[in-house]
Length: 299
Image 1 (tube, rainbow, N blue to C red):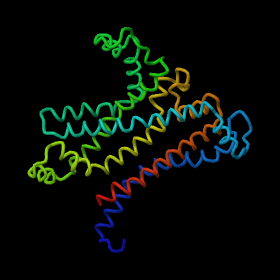
Image 2: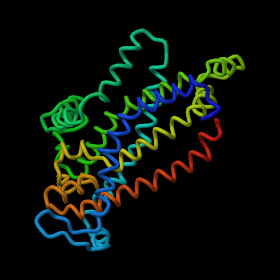
Image 3: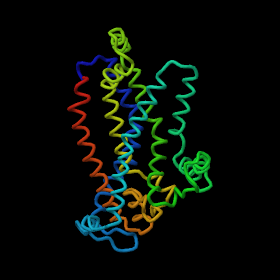
Image 4: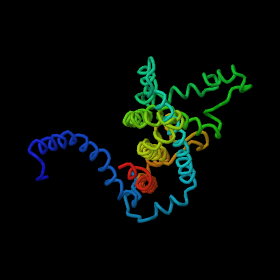
């Protein structure tokens, strides 16, 4: 710090001052609840009964709770949408990175789902999935089905329907990150490859994709974390019980149900802690992979 000039120290101080409101909100609404909730995981706190320290009983219950096992399975299945989101986002970013007419319109159009409220989006998609909804209308018109499908009621389709909403809403967000990555790649590299006779696909595969890897790894990490603790779309579309027949119940929604319907806040804190541990383990593994094959290589 002593090697910095007076101007640099002033700029650094101003930067820390600008970060202060965000850090305070993060501490109040993220870190404080985590610190307060951690001891609850070892109690039977339920509002109506006297709170007692029960040690590891909640954890033993979670490992023998079939509903929690099913909810955790759905949360882990949700990770399957990560490669779909990343591949489609990269393709969209490549498309909108071209200098075409109305390209700004298309960029805005693809980003609109990101700024749309998840509650509004989920309600709209519930209408789309109805038997008399627009999806069944087009499938019937195209002759792909003979009678309307109950996307919201069929247990084998309900979770896939929610996954589709998550994909639709997340594409624009990751597309913008990849677009920033594409525009940070020096054009001279691609131009030199074309002069050497490389085709468009070869340029994308040998130059664009490798230089985009740090962005791929960042987006994949964010997407995996979001998939494991998915809540909003499931809760709005299928309620706290993950209807029909728990087929869409995820770990985060189950934690809400246990806390605010069954009033077992201690057990709900345990479920939340277990989900956080799973996300932490996955994140550490992905960071290790990133250090080996991604960011380090391009430093």
